[in-house]
Length: 476
Ligand code: P53
Image (tube, rainbow, N blue to C red):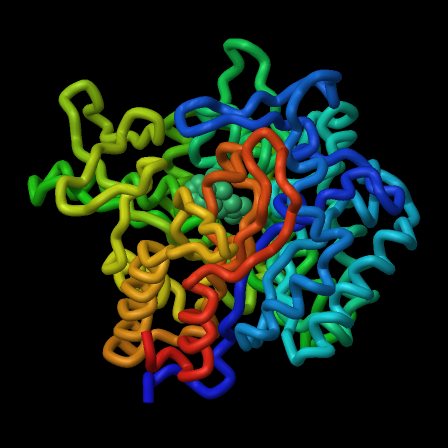
């Protein structure tokens, strides 16, 4: 007995734009992911003004799941998945984002996809907005800096809740909504919120405004889901990188606490329907005047989430410095290397204990069911002649994290719904646009330049994960 409950949702996670391809098929419109080129570790993806000739846009074809999903889901079923987390590409349903009527071909695609999952008893777990909002909403409306986006999103949410209510029970609104706490770089504001900043613009209040509109949209979507079908469960989705103090110096501890405040207040609003006091005080100190109406406050209260979905890849560390007397958090400057943990080839700090810590942190703060909807190890794999990959490092990473997850459940009493490792089939990296940063149990023959047959093969971790699921987490 591993101590995990019966019906624990083992599965895998992906996002539409990172695997589907078919970027113009079935009437699909361009998303923000479709105007991002391939980068690399330390080389940011370029966000171009529309789709330009001669550039490499890795999401356009991705791994062609759009045409190959039946074979891929068959492989997930072979591993014994109980659930499969993906997203609905908003641009398949509303190609521009501001239409009044949805695109039937897009709706039909997800009907077929969900039917294929259900055929094997695999429950779809669906994210509504996973870094793939319609690009038209960026060029015409300025992305989520515009209040009108609330209506567009809620219309999209209502259409898909209504259409799939008997096929999909588990939903999440905005993937890693808190990534944009790193508003200094261009990536998170653009992928989370379709924000492009003018040179010299004061970025921070724009980020808070966009996040506010998203939180209102999320709350209205939760409320709509319950009205459409009370059995639907809607969660938030938070990128959890717990931030440790580098030392036990009191100001390092305060710095870490402030950093946690700046990265995780989004969860407070999703769960409690109110802004935490520390953030309102911070807005006051910085002189941020945000458009937050009484109607918004009422909406937030009426649309609290049912569960907390979160990703966990790594922990962070921070320390106080003399040039920062207010101990303010700046994600591009405040993070330091943790000497106690190893790093991946992409510099991500590997910290299985941090997962147990995160589960407890969420549970202590919110007492809502938790769902680990991403965890995984992005690594360079070597394909053997026989199509196999000896990815023992991935098995080591995942088994160490699952062991800590079990401690949180069995020894600490955290209520955990499931576990879906990220990129269960190799796909395009969100952060770098690379193929070579692989997470899968299933290898996909494609390289960074887009060459390859797209053939699928089972890695060593495939059979390992199959046995983890079969034993409900007993055999790691
Ligand atoms: P990639 C940053 C930090 C933690 C998670 O990321 C992140 C990011 C953004 O890069 O993103 C999530 O592909 C995200 C997925 C993404 C996955 O983590 O950069 O929800 O879309 O692919 C892994 O290695």
